[in-house]
Image (cartoon, rainbow, N blue to C red):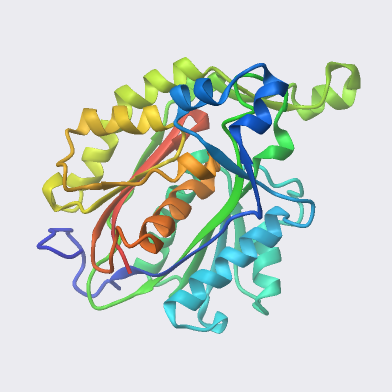
Length: 335
């Protein structure tokens, strides 16, 4: 890690870095006014409670696999490498509808690769979980380069009349290509879960219940927003601080904070809990992209880079959290 970080590593251990970042945003942008009549709400109400102004919803041809591949290709291209350099593919998703043909295998095959490929489901923390795994796999010498993708079509499992969720969730994909470099660029992951609280975010009814009795209605996301808000506001500053401590830095060394884009008010609460310096750029992609679950962290960083607010060499603090209730954070150097 840069800027004098003190990550304790074996001197012979490969140094892990993010080599390229890519994203894919669906073509369709849906404004609050388009949803308000259906859920008996208003643009002002939605903005006040979530900060969301618009969100991206996928069309029929923008599948989880298609978006994952597009984001993955973009990350590879940004790295300056070719697909042949990819030694493993991990796709984080909680909305893939074909578990027996993993999205990661789709992506690997489309890239012309016969490499290990598997899907990860830790909901909104899935991308940061995957980055933690990739760091350790590369650091141990198991693989040299890993393509990590978060790809979601959460709109497939939404009740579009539900006033508590219909305006929050969205679709998209973001990706990192992770490999080696002369210095450490990915810090240790600080992760975990509080499973006894997992009932705050579920798919209900379950697919088994729906199969046995279609009359219960199709499964859709059900969320206790206030419980998740309190949990994130109280617990996530501690996890974020621990991730910074793990690399021997302080919050003054951080240039950009990229939390899961769950809700702008949650982000603001975590920022207050951390007492972040005003110089830190805080990613707010949720304003016009919505909550894209496992895709939100890479998409938010990709947007901040594209907007010129974040630059190569900056220290970024990443923080994923959500269903489970799972969480993961780490510090990276922006490629």
